[in-house]
Each structure stands twice: as structure tokens, then as C-alpha cells.
Image 1 (cartoon, rainbow, N blue to C red):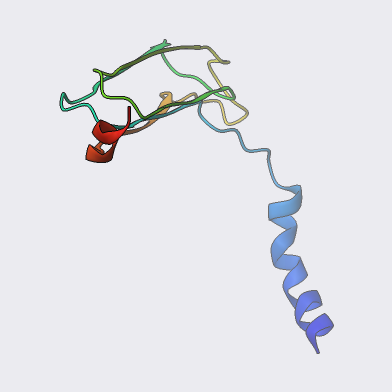
Image 2: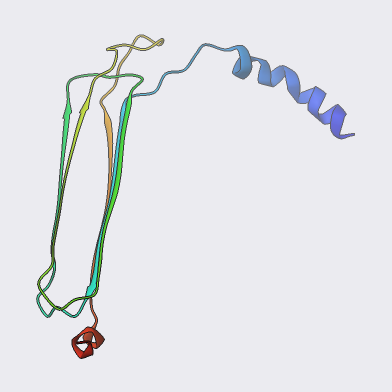
Length: 122
């Protein structure tokens, strides 16, 4: 019975399997995690600078960057700084004849946790 259902639906899948090729816009994904768990009473200075250089319509290219900065322990001031630069170019048109704007997906998590127990360590 399952085979019969599969065969019945097969003609509807043919355009999907043998249809025209698809092309996606260009995509930039930038993921950054900055975390501090310390006994510092001064909030951590966490800087995440992301620069994306793109021009006009774009098809068929990606740029991905991931990073993590983790600080655990200590009682002094904490500074975490990250600089990320993306430069993306792609063909101006895809198989459909059009290019679209670059899709930029920034993901940033900055965590600063005060741990008073660190002040007891010596």
C-alpha cells in the first residue's frame, strides 16, 4: 500500500526533480559568543565589531564566521574585543536572471556573570 501511494505521488515530484535550477542570494552569517565569569566588580567590556562589505545584487556566495571568547576566573577588569570583516561578491544574476540583496545574519551573545566566590581564592 505504501508503494502504491509513493507511485501515485511521483508525477507531482517530477517538476521538482527535473525543474529549472534554483539559485540563492548571497548570505553572510556572523556568530560571536563573548562570556565572562569572574569576581570582577567592574562589568566586562565586551566589543563585537562586524563589518560587511557588499555591492548591489548578488547570487551564489556565502561568508561565515564563528568565534567564542570565554574568560573564567580572576578578579581584575575584563576586556573582550572582536573584529570581523566580511567582503562578499557574487554573480550579478542567477539562472533566474535576477540577483538580490545580500542577506546578513548577525548572531551575538554577550554574557557577564559576577562570581563572588572568586574573591575568596588566593
